[in-house]
Image 1 (cartoon, chains in turn red, blue):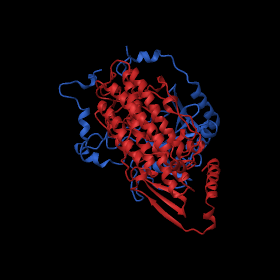
Image 2 (spheres, chains in turn blue, yellow):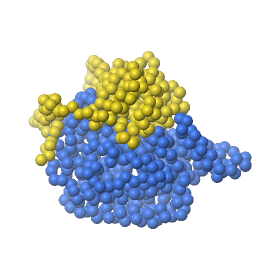
Image 3 (cartoon, chains in turn brown, green):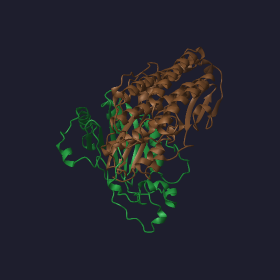
Image 4 (cartoon, helix red, strand yellow):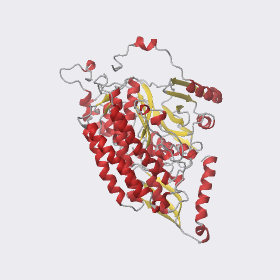
Length: 390
Length: 228
């Protein structure tokens, strides 16, 4: 650990310990607690070995690999169009968003650009997969803190978004719709009007969640000042997405980098929160869903006419070279480093997934917190196991 | 109308007549690293407005991280991994090994951007979240000594990435706080992401998706283009 993080960590633990004088005064016995691999709070099969002193966590060590599928190795024996099928399964709640950075990296190597219409539809689907993903988080966060109702609303309203994604791509969870040079197909008839209606429902859902959860006193006391991540620490661990924006870092690749998608042509706002606690992470995500609705509404009004596929050879051979492209996915920054040797298959694909970095902070973050807060912190970091064990 | 482009369309002459773009921010970054590292910086490459790469010596690996964090404001740790540049001894691996009775003559090793000299190469990426610049760093690793300094004292996030790289490529990270396997069981043998680690399922039967890249009957595939 660096000096900086160490000092901050000690200060953090000291602050937590100040609340827990009882632990210093009463003799407590250490114990080891296994959270997972099968636990609702772990979104899959993450196992966390927590060493406790009374109610306080001394150390937490996540153990992964229960679901590792070796996509980096498998990508080396798949052709470029076949790889999108694999990467669909990384973050299974926002699948379309996984395909986009891979396709963009391949396009960068091939020096192909998707036609404007394809880019606009791509951005719309990209943001819709964000909604499909984060809406579930907004409901799920409640359920993990003991409020069962929100998750039913989340599943109910996510269905509408999934229906719209299915209408375009044919797949509810794994669209596999993005192609090098554009998209598989155009939008179906009547889709734009329907989607406008669905976005209204999603906005209503956000309002509903805001009144149900955000204003709730129990929710606030379970999340405020719990699991505070200082911006420097978050950056050095490679946290991204809403996790780092809720620590006050104003950085969003959709605005600040962004190749191939049309976010820079839309009018929207990057939300940040200065607190860096569990509540901030929830709040920022809630605002981001609303912002996604704003973006999609503008896209629906502004999709240009034209083809959805550029001219690319049917058999795709990507010229030799290296490219790294990252996008702001629902869970955070997702990027692919592709090494090509001019063959049908990539020579090496390094998948930089958001949750891997986001969860790597847990040993640091969980040190010194209380057992119930472990759940609230894990829930607020919001990871998908497929995104860690890819 | 929309500009359609593809590698086939792009004439090489056009590319040559393009005005070479300059990228001051990335050039400054490279200059800063060069000033600090001196001879330890072996090669750099800038793709204007896109990306920048730098290859450093193995000895300067840890210093590079320090310079990037403290001098170049690269506060954001992105990822760390490695590349095995050896061509696969099993050929393209798209073909079933049962169909290939003759041993495959290995291709010659070739390297990507910023070149290389050894089979294994470290690959790390850091980012400047304020000026929105990212840089990929590489370093050669001699096969006789696959060890390198850990970045985790500088970037704590490198911890897990190094554990993954270690188990997947067999690279040893010196001064790593917790050098145990991340994904694989402790008694796993072999290093899965090395090119000579056979993907067994591929050796037994061909990948069914292979039909996707075969010529369709009666069509000349190379000239066939997807309809716009």
